[in-house]
Image (cartoon, rainbow, N blue to C red):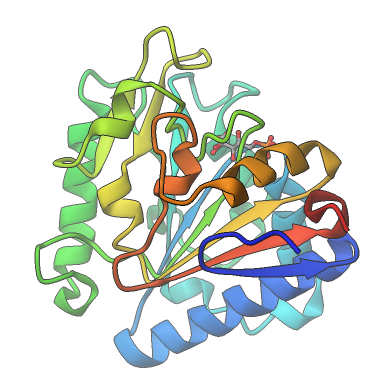
Length: 251
Ligand code: 6PG
């Protein structure tokens, strides 16, 4: 069994894994709504979560999901128009939110084509979280209730790529990440301070091609954000869970 930071849940196949993740997500959403009246969910793009998003729409066990009280945020985004194939918000809308009862105004796309996307998205976070002060940490950072992350073969998560500028940013919630270490196109991404203020973070990894990267994370004695950015995910006062199928876990 891989020893990853936080806790690890392994299921034999993606069907069982998505069910475990969907159940945890739904339980967290209902608890957040009960306790604070609102659920703040941050979603990633990439190929892994798309079938999971579709399962949330199709499987009747998620009919209780409180979409009317949910705000969807985007973990990271490519600086491309929304109708581009590479747009995360396009995938998230098409696979998930367009098929739920969430209001379109509660799905917060990153304004990636504006001149200051990071500043604008931070302002949206400030405005929306400002309506429910119980969702803000003592230092003023918004506390996302659930963040769904993925991990690339190079151990990046969100758009925090090895050796890129964004991994060093500790005084912003959102930044543009670009340059030689960023897989094009340029990105807008949540930073460690915002991600690590979340109540729950889940890293979803499926398939044997993730095993080598997971072994690198498991081999670390301390976080190494430069070479292994996902190891910088260490919630200050929250819970980190890795959701792996047997192939990703090497079992
Ligand atoms: C994105 C992501 C990114 C992703 C990993 C894994 O928008 O691409 O947020 O961090 O989670 O690259 O991608 P796959 O799921 O496609 O392997």
